[in-house]
Image (cartoon, rainbow, N blue to C red; front, side, top):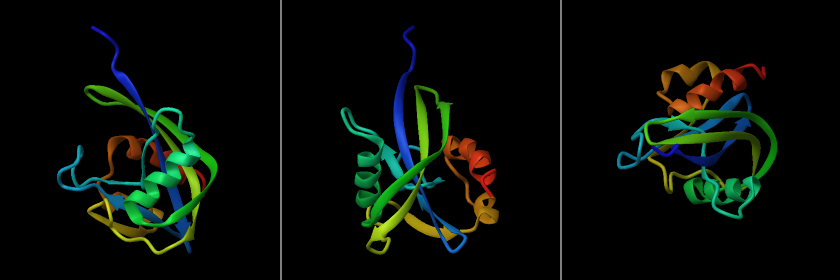
Length: 132
């Protein structure tokens, strides 16, 4: 049996006035209606920063400036492994709109547990909460 494939995923931690921008996956997506930090898969020959800009714009219609890496987790799912890299980001242009997500919200870190997150995002929460 061959090892499961690894998918490199980047996500943006966008904070404003003590609130974080989270997005809800569409009902037709894998892991439907779970919450996550906005982002997506890094394509071949693409840098993390380029992927972050592309994915966040695609999902929310805003331009972001990626900053430093906050955390990394490798999370095994049934058929693949997700290597999730969370980056500090700031919005440089636009207002968020749910273009390719079911919904988005600005929440405090204390409100994270009121939203069911994807397992990989959940695993990265402890590192993020340790930032404070």
